[in-house]
Length: 366
Image (tube, rainbow, N blue to C red; front, side):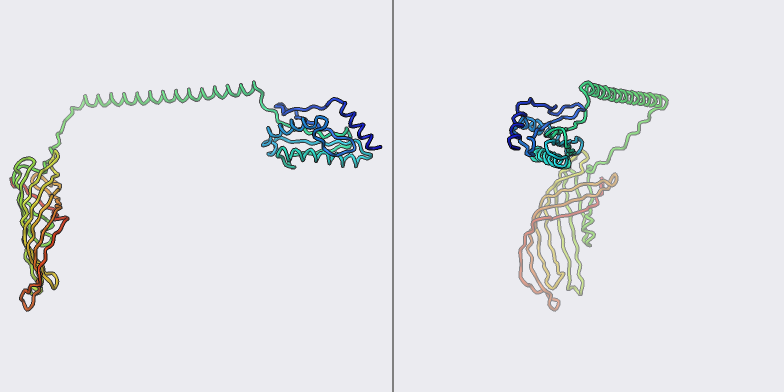
């Protein structure tokens, strides 16, 4: 009999038009309300029944639109379950609670919400329904948004105008200060005659005439070095340098002796003619015995030279020079036995690399 009454009641509900206020999520302050119907004496949520499917689709769409705000707690979701078909209030509340949980399960599974998003209320009266209300805060109206946009545009325009005025005032002030400074400078120049002092011309590094030079690096090794340079034009010069030394010690068991002659041609460059390039030829002889074995022979070679002249005054200058090329040496090796040099063989060597280095003091004679 109970099942028959339940079936008749369900058929009667199908004949009744759908009722209840529903919405897809209005922008006003009134809550969006969704109503789901249940069969009397039954707590199952029949979704395709009596419009529940369409109502659930609208609810899920509203949740999707406001999911972030709902999860943050800014938009509350109220769930109200009702049941009045049971014989006692306690049974009605139990069925209403189950119905509310079934609707919340759909929102959790299909809408991505959590239990913390819901505020649940169950009643033992009012039919066999579950009502969901989503309270969406009221936003500004279109007229209010337009007014805010216009106010922001006016404020930005006023700010830009103020910046332009400030920039124009700054430029005008700078122009006035510049004009005042120019007028003051003109008045001062008018009162005080300008005395022009011509700076003395910088001395040329390569003056015409004859130079005497001494390589200070050679002198530092106790090797006297002197040379002359004849400037045949304002760019070209011919020179020759020579070195000679002879030292012995340890009862003549140690010896350091050499002589060299090095002719050179140079071309001076630049407006002041300070830098130069040239070619050098070198010939000489040596006798070194700084250990048990001595070496005595001849050297011959040459290479390219370059340097820079640093004037120290009208007639004095420093000449920094370097030469790269090849030196060929033929020499004999010997030992001193009982004061007599005993030949130990001969060798020939070729050296590629630096063949000259100098820091020379130059004195222009005339």
